[in-house]
Length: 371
Length: 98
Image 1 (cartoon, each protein chain N blue to C red):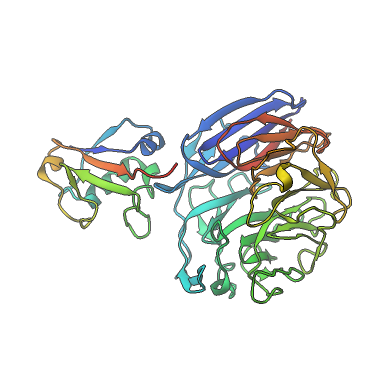
Image 2: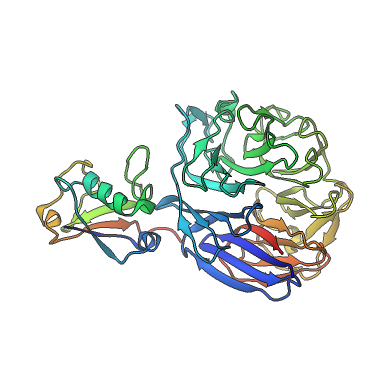
């Protein structure tokens, strides 16, 4: 019988939640490495027992943990993230040149076919790769050396590479996104990159249509349509149908188009989820009502999903890596909040239930569908 | 034998108790003690000093014999009481955060 395993990264440790395919009763295991921040916990699609976790601390820096038994036990692997060559500078908040400095790993993306191959998106923005299960890391420096690097700048949370999307039909194609530089694509396995930000408009930068400088918060893709991407930008929900060559806005009737997460239904490539947040000044749901919005038409027309979610006095945030979908027959949708709740829907968003609450602030949510 | 006291989170990471004992080659300095510590417990690499620059992490301090040695050179010879094992080298996390 199928089952689901939810991997939750929080400000104070990692948690593993398991349930059978009904997804009604959940066992909560954790905190693993209590007191450490977990920006992301990710599973290998090629080996469901292989997990990678980004563990970090303002005191002690970066650690990468690996589990080979589905999260029952963990062992630290390599944590040396060294930029290739002379790192150079990017823009600082005040516009001055600032040297590239490694701070933490925001996102881990295991290969679709090789459990030992894993990518890491880091702050200050760069992409690293390990081909030995996380023991050693090398930078794919063609991205940082694309030429626009000196114009990249940090968003409020830091200059992070937070999205890595692997094309299941083309091993040489990878999409990434950086806050605040924008989206990039490689078609040669990471050697060379180009910005894919045409169509994005950002009023908070001097040239709203600039090649780089856009604060992309998250991107998502359905594996059956690797040329179609959805993006939650700082403001605006966007869509591309040609692998990022051109974007168009699909915010439509959303009550606010600021937000962090975006994800796609496991079986319906035109069904998309976002969680609108009031504004970049007020990082909580509009009117104190926690609402997921679903579009069944690939954007523009959105419906509020509220059943089971707090509809008054709710002032949590849902951070960029804190939404995931499972691939059970009735698609499960999951998201975590800065208030420590992880909400799940077993019916594609029609209704929701907190499968755990009162965790530390949730930074990331991933889910595995296990057979 | 040199004694090193680790902060809580590094004890759990290295799966050791509050204090570890190390044999150090040559004179006992911050560098030689940390080299020995990281050789025995490779999971601590990068957690006390940056792996590239070898600089002490900003929120950590090195105390011994009621002295703050944090700002001494990494090749500063540690007090003889530390070298003899009479007193530990204490690696202390700053009291900050939430």
